[in-house]
Length: 215
Image (spheres, rainbow, N blue to C red):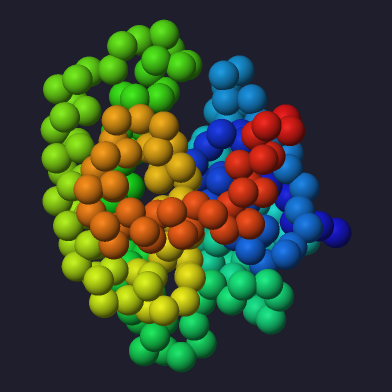
């Protein structure tokens, strides 16, 4: 049976899982979750993720939640299919793991606030973005991306010279930010800008975005 991803198609966390499955050429089923109706806060979804957040994932008798745990499982379980996404050399993988942590603890908290202000509030709630919050977090994001700029001046991708989960985990937020004023924070850093364009053009990511248009 194909793995199942219980999710809303527009969720950044869910899009990480979709992109990983596409990179690995793994067929999967999406079980739609209507977050506006609060389905993620009710049974049967809570039996899959007791924290009430998407995505939740099933592969046979295995049930997982937390998007980065799902992407790691897919990358290792389907070793030999599609893009490797992880290294089996421990020193190389240690470097990838550092940048996976950087994305989770330095990049994502800042950019999530920008996604909320610039996209979620106006599109889903009919509210104006708080310009002070946007400005503050664009400055914070710039400080994070200065570190990325230095790293990407030395290697093509964050974890080395090959595309890995360290890069993939950034895709949903970067994709959304390209439609906002935060785009300039990426574009003013040449190595970051080139890296973002490269990963956004990957066929697996294009397939992930297309899922929203087909829904």
